[in-house]
Length: 167
Image (cartoon, rainbow, N blue to C red):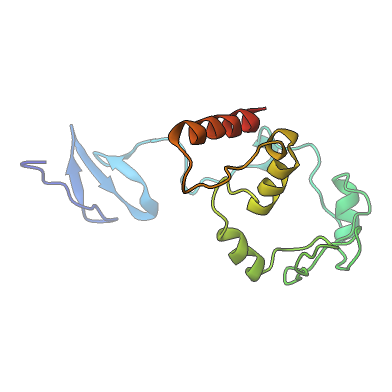
């Protein structure tokens, strides 16, 4: 700000005047004109456990993990590492790549192949086979000699193909 004389204030020695002299003294206490002021919260004050409000009624404690789990209602759960569906996996465990016969992670080769397929791509061979299977397409008669076909004949055949595809 223009004309600002802001600075960092330090314990013992720095003074700031705001309607009186404010001092920061040992322990971070703030005094105004030599009298401590209460700015709320914090400070070196200790609080008795009985004065704490909103604390849980039960605090898990015990001589060992099993006792603590029982105290919080976790029963006899265990974090034993293993390889079954009822044990936890180690952080450095691995998974096999997926195959056509078994689930697993995708291999880098599979991911590369997948990335090479365009959005909305279709199986061209499957599409051709599906068109050949349509009776309307199979019933069309090809032009005998495309080099000598006239425009009306080509247009008629093209319209037949379009109608067959729509069917």
